[in-house]
Length: 395
Ligand code: FAD
Image (tube, rainbow, N blue to C red; front, side):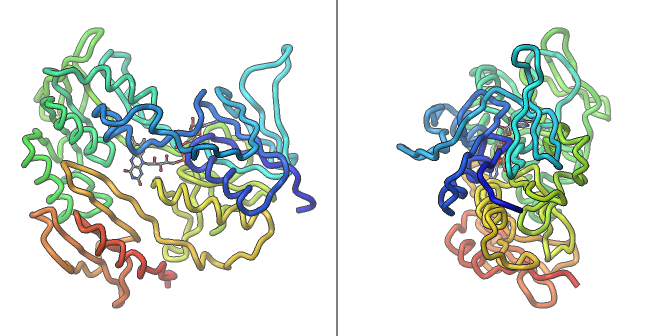
């Protein structure tokens, strides 16, 4: 690439903001513009299913911007990017000015459009998803004392909302099609321990059974299961996963197989176009393929690597230096932390504690090397093991 004088970041949340910060920290003095579909400055999403939902955190505490932070960014908020021309690095924007389509061009584009929550097709009131602050405000307004909540899906968001609603005194049911909560992420043994957490807290858990429909007229009154049972509920949360928000890139020519496919520095196949955060799938040397990660820490940290590559700084080839993916989740007072990649035939080793007591440190080993680590209420030991974790290149 020639001289770099301007960067447009599409997506004004965690990864987009981290990109702007990294640009300034790494000495970029040119023009930085952030285009964001939400009409809000960057805010933090993890509290939306935890303390914010419970009323223990205010909207003002969610900001991702440090006090007095001045990045010299031009913000274009409440505006969606609708297309990208990679050859001219031009982003088309929603809305028009004087009847003409608006667009913005730059020397480099960073795509940071995150994920969209999957939705059930129904316009019943009382049915929610949770991705944005507006979603959280709407859900919170419905979680009134004495109401019953049914959560569809026992992934992270569903499990956390169930835990939070339970702490608020609501009666909660969780319905999950898989054999255990977090089955895909943790496997059956640990998923069963998480199921134990729900049950020990009095949450009504229905496992291995799909939802076939919703009940209600105007407002939801229940959830219908495949075996004909009806779970009555005043409020329903669909926690059924999220998809990369890349629909606007459909005609861009970029490889969009489960997120924007990138090399191990966030570069796409188009010169000067990078992708970071939930919407991106960076090449992972330990898997030998691109991998989309939907975790907070990776979305915050990887932009610095992408910016280094974008600014032409020294880079480590083949993904060397990439940290293993990491997530945490807070459920019923238990902090679950996981880092790395586990496969079903890796050796599972309990290093300390037991899953049943929600106090556990466990690792997965492949050919004797630790490839993943999990902690339940073991933050110090977990951090020690995580530091030693390596992304082992696939054979
Ligand atoms: P996002 O945060 O999704 O931001 C993308 C932004 O781009 C959004 O503002 C969106 O409106 C905007 N956008 C989308 N399309 C366009 C477009 N076409 N034009 C312009 N702007 C666009 N992770 C953990 O590791 N631990 C947790 O405990 C945890 N808890 C979570 C709880 C909740 C309720 C949620 C929703 C997520 C949680 N996560 C957690 C995941 C974490 O928040 C995400 O990994 C992180 O937000 C990803 O950041 P991002 O900037 O890539 O995407």
